[in-house]
Length: 215
Image (cartoon, rainbow, N blue to C red; front, top):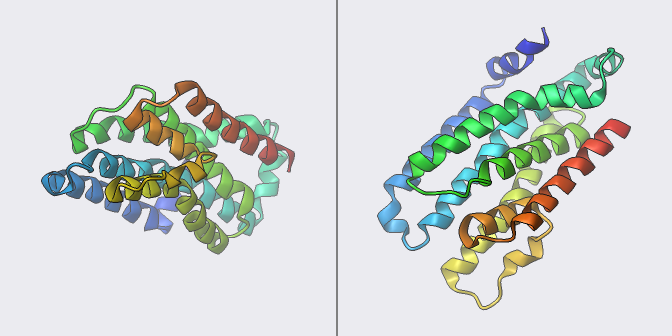
């Protein structure tokens, strides 16, 4: 029964499917528009890839919101299984789906990415999904927070793109250095500090797992 929850969500809530289709369409449009986007093509291509963890991370958040509305979440918590293993199960397929699309996307976009990029984007799917699971108690609330948290993760990359486009003297994206996607961008374009990128992502994941298990 638990294995059908994700498929049930996709049938009942086509917005996830539509978002996935839109994301792939954006990637194809980005690739097609490459001559017009130069010399910022790499930045725009990476921005389109940031949507991958947002799309797949949104699904466990919506499922959790549904369970809270239906009152099944409390019932799941009394099963003879640790919360950590429950989270691992819920995010296993999310990690695999994110990994698959991250490996395919560079071929669609015609770019090369660091080998560590799939690991960072998988952790961002966890971060996004865990935030929705923790802070949303209903479907409507989950959809609202999905937009807010989505903008939080997109802002560092979007601001960096504006800085590069307008050739600003100050890199305003540094104000979002606490956001994981800032360091993913640094790894992608500037070969940034791998250790800091991993530490920031791991700290976010562990913090959200901790508060999810203790609440």
